[in-house]
Structures are given as structure tokens and as C-alpha cells.
Image (cartoon, rainbow, N blue to C red):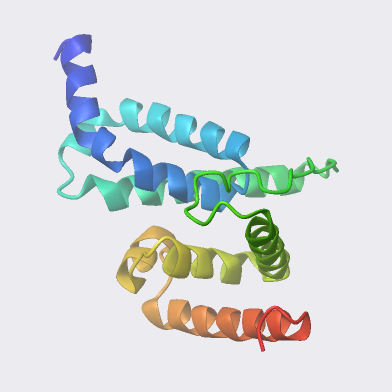
Length: 179
């Protein structure tokens, strides 16, 4: 096939999965910039593997698995570097503009505070528990999809999900977010 044909085939196969893939990248990476980098790296790798991609019946889960593996590999590589970085501060309310809600500053402030408490609670979970909660409860992945994505048995996923929810409940109860 010509380069133009490859581009058309690639777009036809991958474009329908862009939104879900970017959301997954955002959930894995934790920031927009890192998510964009991960997403771009996935597209480059997927294009390089176009011959394999064409023969796959369901490219969405395959692409998610490739992205997850890339994320894990990069995280391991970063952990071995023994480099300490200063995290960028997050502006209060960043990303909330698109959420539906009344045009009420008090309501917006409450929502921002609640989301910040939830983010802090999620940060207290282990990486494994946070990933399962984010994939299942936030992104709506089914247990079998998470199994395909992570390679973990469904029983392990259920266990982690249960423990993560219990820990979140405990953290949020302790700080008064839920009663």
C-alpha cells in the first residue's frame, strides 16, 4: 500500500477510538501534557504496527492495552532514574469549565473543593487500586475490559476494586466529604 493508503486505513481504524484513548491516557498520566505525550506515542507506535492493527477484530481494547503497557514501561523507566521533580501546581477549577452546573460561584467553589478532596483521596490509594477505580468507576470499563487491558485476573480486579472503594470511603468519611 502507498503512504496515502496507509494513512486512510489507519484513520479509519483508530479515529473512532480517539476519545476513549485520550481519556485513558489522561487517567493514567494524571496531567494533560503527559496524557498528550502518551497519546501521541501510542499513535506513533500503532502506525508502526499498522499491519498487525489491520488484522485485529477489535482494535479499541488492543490499543488500550498497548497504551497501558507503554505507560507502565515509562513509569518503570522513570522510577529507575532516581530523579526528583517538583510537581506543577494545579489551578483551582482547571478543566471544570465544561462541566454542567448552575452559574453560581458558591456552587462552583463547593464542587471544586469536593473534586480536590476526591483527588487527594485518590492520591492516597496505591497505583494499582487507583488505576482500577479510575478505569471502572470513572471511565466505565467492564471488568473483562480491565482484564484485557492490564492482564490481571478478574478476581484480582474485583478484589482491588472492593479494597479501593473501601479505602476511599474511609478517607472521605474521615475528612467529612461523606457521612
